[in-house]
Amino acid sequence: MPFIFEEYAGFKDEWVSETITIRDNGTFQQEGLFRVTQNGVVTNDPYSDNGTYSRNGTNVTFRFNSDGSSATATVDNGALIVALDGVSLIYRR
Image (cartoon, rainbow, N blue to C red; front, side, top):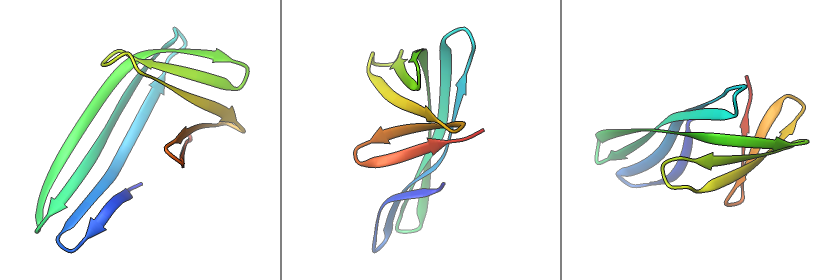
């Protein structure tokens, strides 16, 4: 991080940070920050969500309380890997 989603003259959209806290009780907390810079004006957009997760072998499914959506991930060699729209997000401790 940061990861630049889009950038062109006078505009930049970036993903600055994200943390996922996974608890033993089957719940998780997600927090992060997006930042948009337009003509030199910076706008920070923090976000957070939480929910539940289940694990089956190396597969993990997250269910978000905010909208009921879900996301899947794989645990591999100590990392949590989420495939999202053709991009692999790799989370490490």
